[in-house]
Length: 301
Image (cartoon, rainbow, N blue to C red; front, side, top):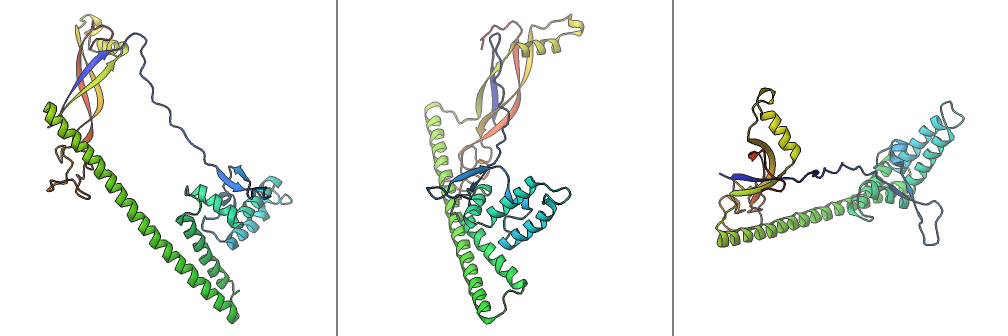
């Protein structure tokens, strides 16, 4: 059974614990290629608006679906239509221009999906759109004559072959990433195991007892004194008890701090403790009741 004891010290006057930083929110930015190419080929401009949201289409929408969505929305947003405006119509037109340009749309997708340009995710998305476009052309009756049918069949086969190849490459990349994570976990576990072995050999400590140092402010001491004094403050104690909540690391209870999976005595891939992941130690949070004299001096331990 893991034990825990605490060492408290009184903070000097004016001490204030460092407050936790407030959570920050990062607003995403979509990088869209400029309509007018620059001397170096593609000048980029920052744009906060999401073209998919403006047109109300999904990221998998084909060019035909984008154009259809633009026509439907443009009728309502046209300046000559009640409720329409030039600003809204211009935003729709710009969004449609971006989503019907393969290069500019690929840059938008890379930002929205948070993947690098040329990644498998973008390649898979592009070929999926190609398949959707072929189906839409067939449903619209545009594939009639034998030459068009043959061309569509070849396009179908090329798209499906490309998607199958992408799926295999993704599976291979996922397997490699899983293996890398396991190897990293094994190296970290071996380092933790070495630290434990060294500690046992030099100090005889297995890590079941943990010392935690916590700082007690004068305000905390005053509050505890007021709460534990008698009615009306008539009986003032010479010692108060402060309940302090703290988090530390202790030996994993499942592997007893050795990192191995149950039934295995050697650290290896897929043989690490399922609770601590082979790290031998786990976090433990507990409330420790610390006795403290009311006349404790600043900085006293």
